[in-house]
Image 1 (cartoon, rainbow, N blue to C red):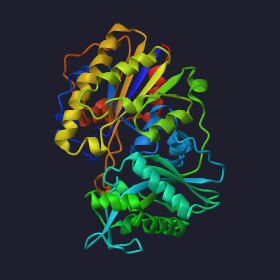
Image 2 (image 1 turned 30 degrees about the horizontal axis):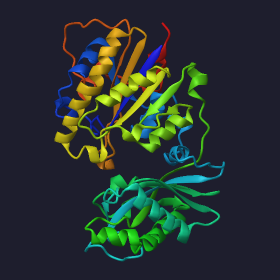
Image 3 (image 1 turned 90 degrees about the horizontal axis):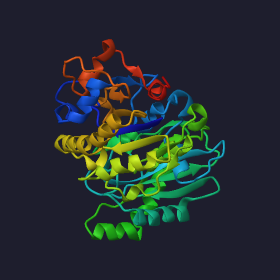
Image 4 (image 1 turned 120 degrees about the horizontal axis):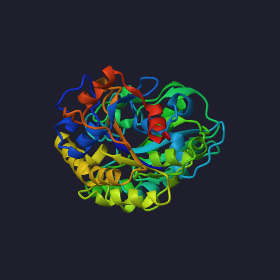
Length: 406
């Protein structure tokens, strides 16, 4: 048995009720449409009915209930960076961002209503520049209980050794273009986290890297935004649960960490692949290459973020992905009776006020394939939400049906 799980991150609409005007509905996707007509097509949801956040969706699609096995995204980032967390440690995602004051780039020391989050990726800062900034934070702010670890580009890690408190921290994407006041850490222990963020502004403001960026007309990475806290959790190994080996293909270290946490191997050369297009065919070829040595390939393909700036861009990405990745998978599925394919999506991160969707489309196909009933089904959110009497499938159960030996 061989299986490919394709996680199309950001392809589904974040707003409900659904319509036929979403990017997915407008895109020409003949291969996804064929699968929808000859496979198990519908909508899926998390057991708790909560938002289909990217890493949570990844966990659920592998059969792990997020209510039991998810404390936040940062512990998965720690795994991907090979940072060990002791039982009482709290990990935070540390995201380099660009802040400015209401009247321009101000020097206010405190984060509050006068500060705007201008760029949640610090102007596309590269990894080497970011590493210098994280080194600067370690020089000035690290202690026996606070440690910073460099990741890639704008996303890094902070560990609070023996951290205490119960706090809520917001994804900086939610605050993009807004005052940070409503998105700052809240709850017990939040004051300490906020003080670290404010201290990072002081350290980073006049760092040589940022001074050079400003002189070059680039946005400075002038704050380390702390969010996504969580403690390490021990997840059952996928191979022990299902008797199958797996590999994760993703350019995102967070998803690499999810895979490593359940015992999946890591494809070492993924950063060399053409994730931003326009030619995705090598990604499909890599899936087939890995199937020679692994039973399950988990392909996480990000369609949100900088690669999809607007509806037109996203439609184009979806159409190319359908042609260059889903097309070859469909051809292989027709020729290989032991191959199974699950394709699922989740919405992108958006303003919480406009995020109302708790379901997203999926399609699963395996031999013997279903015969079309003559009615043309199109793969998009509205059509998926109408399947099975409008009742979504539970996300954590899809893997069992995909791998069932029947």
